[in-house]
Length: 339
Image (cartoon, rainbow, N blue to C red; front, side, top):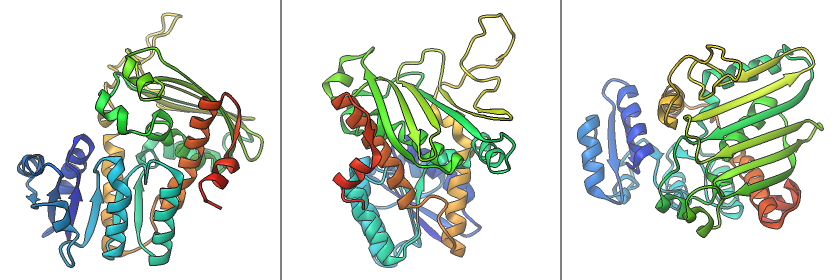
C-alpha cells in the first residue's frame, strides 16, 4: 500500500509517525503539506517520502488511501477530493466547521459508497471502550446520569483559536461523540454556558475558554459537561456513568490531575500535560484500524454520519451560549439542512 498524508502540523506529524510504524511490510508513506519544508522535515524524522504538494497525492493512482490532518478549513475540500478519487479516507475531526458543509460531505460519501473514517480517537481508548461494554452488558443497571470533563493543561495558540470554530466544535465535539457512542443515546436538548477567564483572544474570536452544559438525552437521562482551556493541574479528560447498580469512571487513574482534600495518596502519578501522551495508544489504534479497513474493506469505525451527529450537538451548544437559552438539537438539524 502507498498511503498519502496531508498536513504535517502537530497532530499530522504524530499521525505520520504512527502510520510509518504500522504500515505493512513493503508499504510506503508519502507526506504533503501547504508548507513543503515542514513535510520534508517530518518525512526525514519518520522515514516517509515527501510530495511536492497535496495535489500530487490526489492525482489518479498516486496513493491507495489518504489521511487528512490539515487545518479544519481544508477538511471538506480534501475529503471530497479523496472520495472522488475513489480512495479510502481517514480525516481528523471535525469534517467541517459547520453543519451544512458536513451534510454536503455526508451526501457525497453516501453517493460514492466511500470508506471514510473520522478521527474520534476516544472510541479507541481502553477506558472509554470498557465503559461502553459495561453499559451494554447491564453492569451499571439503568443509566441515571452521565458527566464528562475535558480540560487542557494550557491553551492552544491564538492563531489556532481564530480558525478552530470554537471550543464546542473543536474540543467538546469529542465529549459529544463519546457520550453518544458509549450510551447509545442521542442528545435532544442542550443548555450551555461559556465564560472567559484567560487571555483576551478567546473573547475577541467570539469563543469561550471555560464551559459548562446540561444535555438531555432522548430517553430522559441528564448529562453534564465541564471544560476549560486553563487547567493548570494537567490535561484532564474524564467521564462518569452512574446507574442503578454501579458507577464507572473513565480517566480516573494515577495520572488524573486531581488532589484529595482528605489527604488520600490517590492519585499518585504525574498528570499528563497534553492530549497526545494521554491518548497515544488510542491514536495509534485508530490509524491501525483505518489501515486495516483500507487494505481489506469493511465498515468505518466512525462515519461522517456519526461526525454529523456530534457536530449538531456542538452547534446547539454554541447557539445556546450565544442566545442564552436551551436549544433543541432538531432546531440546529433543520437550520443546517440535515433532515
